[in-house]
Length: 215
Ligand SMILES: Cc1cc2nc3c(=O)[nH]c(=O)nc-3n(C[C@H](O)[C@H](O)[C@H](O)COP(=O)(O)O)c2cc1C
Image (tube, rainbow, N blue to C red; front, side):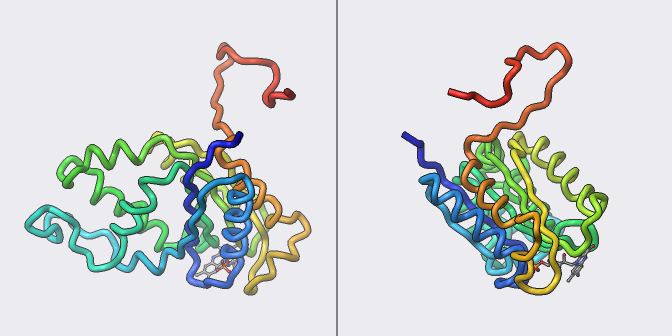
């Protein structure tokens, strides 16, 4: 029997019917197929303000006072999730500014000086993370920086970056015509998001010769 997990899909494009949204929907469908509890959100429904100096914008109780729905997303959906799949268009060779702000503002809730900071920092860890990228340019260097950034930020947060896929498209919705079928890859990533493992071996790491169990 498959254990049901909580999977959160975050779409970081301002186009709710664009290419990233198509990848996000496919990943959500895959995760649902695997029996997981899945929720999809659009980041611009939750995140408006950028990170500021916490010393000037925390309220008297010490909570972040930026007036948007970030805390609803971060505390109510992101922290309880077992897996999070981010879908973002490539904007100037990186994630969208709003998604970067999502990561920047984690600090406001997990630093030592934030209320319940250490418990939030604890809940941040041990998540399966997937990444779906939509971009116009197909050369591998275009997305390398973003993939490397995810590798580092998930390592720092003690999360597992278990997979990513890149789809080539520009006008709204044309990602379905990418012959490498990133929509199917996103579906598979969603379906297997809880089964995949992140490995980082040294020559003497003890391991089986087989990566995949054939049983
Ligand atoms: C502000 C902006 C910056 C972009 N920068 C890049 C880029 O650096 N490289 C690239 O390949 N595509 C770039 N694009 C194209 C988008 O990544 C592409 O159109 C993508 O499919 C849009 O996804 P969406 O429909 O989910 O918004 C950019 C688009 C915009 C609007």
